[in-house]
Image 1 (cartoon, rainbow, N blue to C red):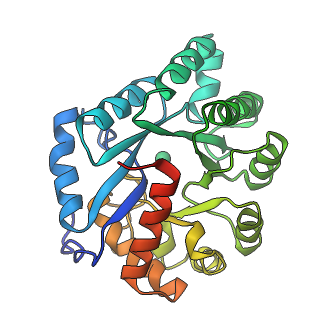
Image 2 (image 1 turned 180 degrees about the horizontal axis):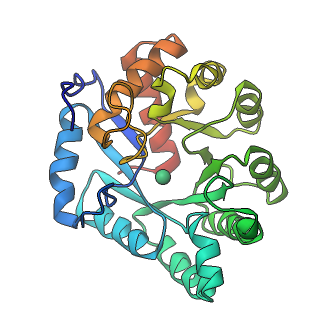
Length: 277
Ligand SMILES: [Zn+2]
């Protein structure tokens, strides 16, 4: 992984709010069996439970299987905002919606996500399809009474506007929060949960740390978004749930609480959101 030794174990168990254990950055195929060692390495440092997120049909199916196979895994399913325009252009969006809606009813699926808007990787031609898809996923979460995990990349205003227009579910989680202090305050006021990834540990992320500092502890989640966004000093390397303790420690410092308290409160919030594992 890198020359840095793995993080010290956390003093309390913690939940990785958002991970993609099925994705390898080098394109290598990952099977269900490969998850065992990854989950064991995470548990060894205190990360006993993860939310495995599927963002297209194959990975949504994989997430449900992983959650059935491993007690430490629950699943989220959705079509990623970059996936919806692609499926729409291919005339396969309606069939994909039907399968996501079916998978979403599975008892091990505890969240609809990640859905939202990504104006970084999808250009103006995909905006309408993304927004339609976001609205569809919000409605699905509401109909099933499950939480929603929101993906927002360079689309803060439209994400907040559509969440308000569609009457976002009571449990709405801003995954990999990337806004500023003002946006954090707006999300907090609406009762959303803000989930922070390894980006909060980057040297140039002072604005993000300032945003974290205004979030009440009960509305905070921690995540890897692995295999992406490895925390400092692993930035640029492959991320995994076993690296989450580094992010937790930095966040505890920003929030002015002990690492143990941050673990306990975020775990309790994760259980309130997603139920028992
Ligand atoms: Zn993700």
